[in-house]
View 1 (cartoon, rainbow, N blue to C red):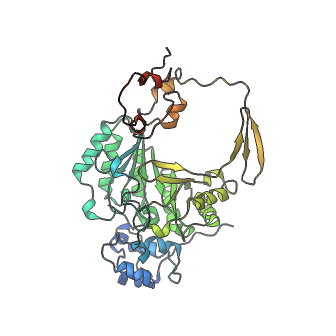
View 2 (cartoon, one colour):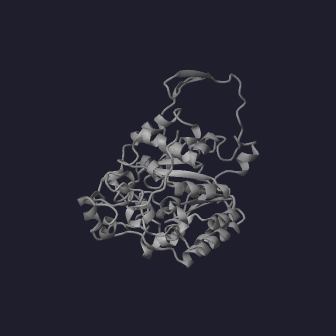
View 3 (cartoon, rainbow, N blue to C red):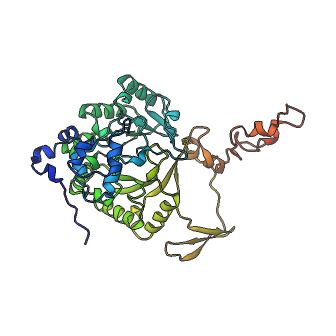
Length: 443
């Protein structure tokens, strides 16, 4: 039998009336953020107390609901580690960066990250219900001075109106669900007025930090803007409470598909068996595991990092051992702005011109015979290939497979190999222009 999903409330909140406890505005206005406040709920370690008393630390705020999920007698409680700072946050580590994903470099206007051809990340606030200690946007998140203003919001909308290749907008921040209801509704309305935007997505940890925000009124409002998708952020089975299950049920009944993005964190969820329990518990509340992220190279997150091999080990332990739709993609978000790179165990062992050798999760090895006759797909005569091409420069390996180019060169490659020489009779650019590439014609 599955473990029952329960509700918890710290003893200090036992006398709070349910009407207040279940009011998301009360939860926001009673967040804990000092050593004195937090110690009323759980005894602090020396490391935690030192961090909480350090000036300039990444913002601390914890909702009464979420801190109630912590076992106060366990200094290694996995929920505790995610929201209570420790002195290790102050330690620098190799490759640590302020903006490790180079989001600001890929922002044509403030707060709008256009990294992939057909979708954008739209940062709509810098505020959250509570603050994850490994936050990839700690450079701006939690800082009221970094909040996006009305002028920047209009710049974002104007960019989207003028960029017809964008069909998918992901709202994030900060957390979009902490916005005032009228502001959120205006934002969604403005996006839905743009004809080429097909999909709106929201990334939010509010259902996890403050599930009472997911009211029926909110769900009814969101349902007006379909197709709309929502990804939550659960890292450990202990975070899946009765309140979260009920919030997800309301969202699902409003027709909103739910996914989960988690982060691989040392000492929190770096266990294959724990991860299996997490993904199975998520699917029971109708949330599909979507991504498992390798921890980013951001300030304060060094003590959370694991080897990439740990993530591959976890996927190995999930594939075949649980439902396929319960297996997330393990993602390394490329430092420097390369985007999300899926990493997984190697299931293809070898190949020849007529068969491939593959293995399954048990180590069973088999062959798959390739077809002896196959008429290759021709991108030059395919209407989908002609009409749905990404922008030049972003076709990547797909463009090479489609015959658009034979090589991708590192920046400065030709200049390096010129070795300082000038143009001479043997240096004719046409020598390195592949026949049939680019123009679609051969000489």
